Image (cartoon, protein in one colour):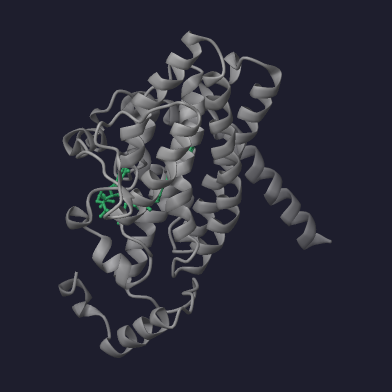
Length: 319
Ligand code: BYC
């Protein structure tokens, strides 16, 4: 990375770093190193795509929710996730790349989205586990990103975090209800926790030592806390929540360690993580195919909206 910065003006680079160190936000029209811009293009678009692709495992249950109340709540939650994607695409567009280009990169397999969304959601308890664990992990990461150095990204995070907190409670409530139900319902909740626990821990990315972008991203305060630190925060918060309602995380080593003041945990299966990222998870193909189809089916809506906007614009100009 140091080598890639050699093309930048050293004085501008030093001024830029001084701004970052003084906690002054970088705004779209400010000077920024090309590598800073590219890193944000990558991370914010990955984040936006995650929000939108993340609607799919839950969309699976809208027509089968067990009550009108749970259906309304689930629909509101999924709609929020779509909204998060839109704020994030807007933030990403301020970096000089169009939304069409971001979507093209996603469809060509050049842009990533969170690996956790490549797992199936076969039972209603999965709606609980996704809200509680996946949104729960996202909050830990996003609270930290509220202080990211790029202004539009930081501001998008504020509202997103408030909504994610509702999502986390929605998921936990489903798990709690199931745990107060029949033996079969308790088993269903435990099974969902067993399947979503490890993919949720993987959301924080590889270990710090294997994280390609962390060191420069931390220096530029794009990331404020490391992958491993955030993962540990999530584990420390979530295990007591599981125990409170009678669930057990699927890890024999997950025991409180009074010496470190943290829970211990077993090694993550990194082969599985990289394999899913490479496109070989149980639902990668299904998720991308669905997105491409929905995008193509929606073309007439985009065209109609553009035509309407042009018409309104012409009216304003001739008035
Ligand atoms: N999945 O150097 P590293 C939600 C990639 S949605 C896939 O540590 P970085 C919700 C990484 O991109 C919100 N790929 O990267 C929605 C990089 O590859 P590239 C989800 C991953 O960026 C609906 C390589 O591995 N949250 O809440 O410094 C329903 C090396 O990693 C993953 C976000 O999207 C992964 N888990 O740090 C319910 C968070 N991890 O790009 C809920 C936004 C790593 O060089 N993103 N990779 O090809 C981030 O905060 C950071 O990008 C990460 C990774 C912490 C994930």
